[in-house]
Length: 69
Image 1: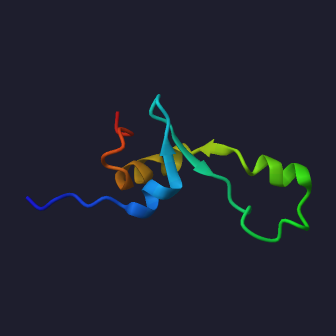
Image 2: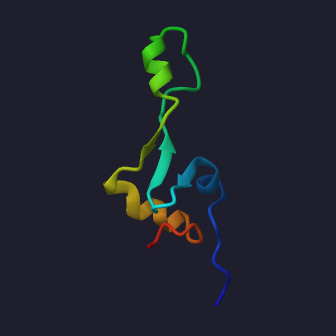
């Protein structure tokens, strides 16, 4: 059996909480923040939970994270 490869990009962009929930950063924060309201930019700092529709695919990218439980 070959070794299972981990997706390094996924490990850098996604975090798994202690309860097993997968968290991601919000989109739209990296540029053009001057035209976005302060409230909008501030709210984009927070991490949000990965949508249930994408959870199975995301957990496949994180085989050793403990997100499979």
